[in-house]
Length: 496
Image (tube, rainbow, N blue to C red; front, side, top):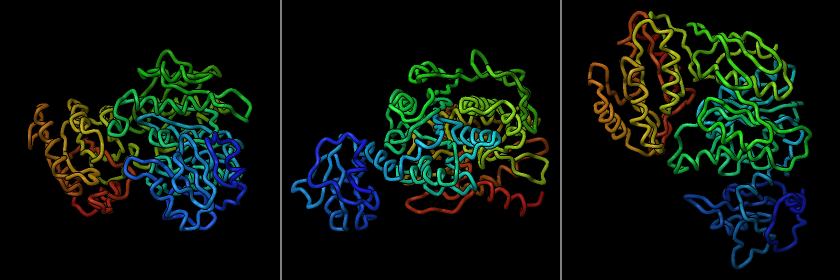
């Protein structure tokens, strides 16, 4: 493929040199440049790719795309663009033959519930007979088999996204579902994707260390819905799927050419007669296509919302009601999403990814009705995140959990002991009583051990914050730690 072909659909400000040169790869990492590659210089918060153009040229780059052409001009073609991250997504799409134009593409965004909703939507579409790929924080499914997502991002980089979609097309998929983070939308990782359906789950304060304000965070999420209105090559009217119960519903509805709402009231896709049991949830799904009774293994009101979102998206994609019922009966929660551990103890143990106040409250609310005894919550707070959540998590636990054990989460380059001290002070300010309904144990394994020692007949232990994650990032190191595995080890080796 030539640079001319890659730039065909891209708004280019200026060009230096002859662009009819062959391109064998695309990268934004100067260290990964190989002879024949196109190097895209991305501006960044820590590093500016423009500073590495010289290194890319020396490594054999065939051409450069950037926002600010360097002086002196390199001896290879240089194309200037207004927005390099968006350009990278569009270039990646062109390099892989625009795979999203050959498939029905669904994007799921929101603060909580993205992974579950993505997984459930794909399950319904497969049940409806559509070969479907999906990509989440937890796993990558190419339409044939699933494998862990090792990219380190909810939504991978642009080249990886397009490579995934191209692989799905090659496997004969007719649909794909992507979990789309606000970071991905802000940095152009899904630029070049032609979405048919966009799903909004909910919005709560999160990643404000990156987005600064809730309004900016919401606007980044809204970009997925704005992409529905972009010029397209596929037929049909793109559809937005919106949680009617979220205070931001009207904002997202206003961005979509066509919109379907879901929720417990005043929505196009409704859950009626909801019943919660220790083994799952049932409800009557009411939609314009009719009504069916849905029985799911998943627990809690938030998972009913996830199923409603998935059902609305699948119906918009052409599935019927029967595949929703069949998929719900056989689909388990994704790993680390209110995952029940099978334990030979008189108490229950669940692992959940809940790391925001909204998410923790939802998980505890789901577990309370199925807990005849005490509800014991083990959690901490990660570094590099909104420090207001440290108090917010405790506010969510207050009145919901009977006992809280504060511990280490993913500190990154923050001092985990300092995070714990901040949370302990907030807990005491909120009325938690040390060594009564509050325990502080920095070592996460020992915190689990303490929770299991406290738990008795009819109690429930919630291990929150990390879910499926397999390591703890600490000062540049990756310490192996998988909550379900560690919990099972402790419960197996400790005498009941």
